[in-house]
Length: 265
Image 1: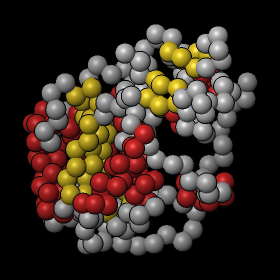
Image 2: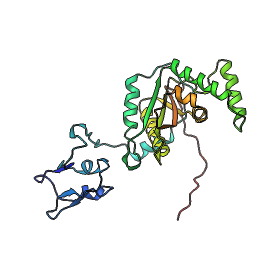
Image 3: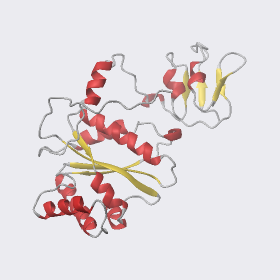
Image 4: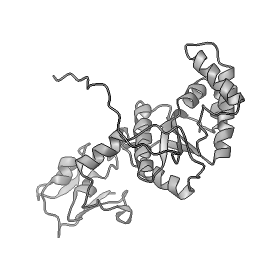
């Protein structure tokens, strides 16, 4: 059964859908219309997204779920400023994040590119400071049991502060989001990191700050009980995680960075 249908009455026969297909699943036929080649389709949607006259439809990509691309896009200057002004937020206000806001952030993040358009990431969300505090406590329990390492002085200091009432593990964030990838996915780590970066930018547009949860990942990598506490699905690996919340303070400046180190070949 054909997945792709072409309305010959409006098709311009310009071949753009064929040109952008990454797996050569469609080609121009003798009449100059696109048709399926038999190569496996990865459902990326390039062919449908590129067709300005909407002549091509895909059975696996319902037209009613397609979103229009905004005609007005941010300028290069606006995008540069957004990226360069990102800060790792470690001081969060008490303002909770509405579930609808987190859902909107993840709805953007799930659209991040994945290898071969696998779209096989799984998200774990803890929303609410009480749940985040519970997770921080679990992290501390696991960190205490870890053998000595180069990170021991940092971990020991974090544990002491936790016992004194200060959370340096998850920074008293109001939400934590973790990303899992299938254990057999060769590029799952890259896919998850890209997706969580999308989430960071989507959060920023909604006034929500983020910082990557390095200590959580350090503890989870060595602790099966912690992964079980997080209910990581069978067959999946916990790849990366971050804390989210409304920043307590507003940053005013973009600090300088080290000079670019690049090799042009």
